[in-house]
Length: 190
Picture 1: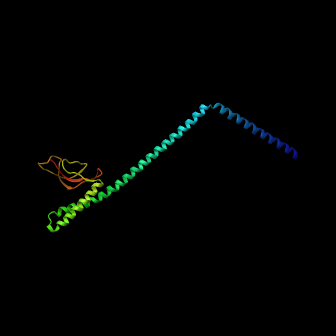
Picture 2: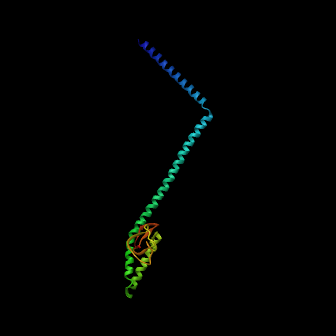
Picture 3: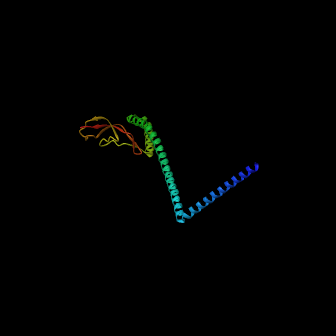
């Protein structure tokens, strides 16, 4: 009985091997036919197509990186400018107070003349430094411009045109071309 089982097992094993060999042969023949069907021109076209796809991806990746670099540089510049603008805005009340002190001391005695000169020199130096950094005073002569001026009062004057600035209550300033504080003015109305 054991011999019968061994014979059946060997026969089954030989049959399985024969099937595997036949499957491998069919697969090899199919691969050979596929290779034979694919001409060198077609293979070359496929390779060129793959190369173009890789090149396009590379070009897009490089463009994305360049855009990232530009965006990062712009953000860095804007951050620096915003910090400088914020600092200049905080200094405006100091400049207003120095102007008021200078105006109040113009009628002072000769003994205070040294203090007045010192105050004027410090104030001039502060203005020069801020001007170098991009702070400029808004000119308040001529017609009223709502982009630069803040009208807080209206008056009449025969010598002035309609909508012309009559008086300045508080100076206005621009920082690198951007208005950070409009000038408060009195406007002529006819």
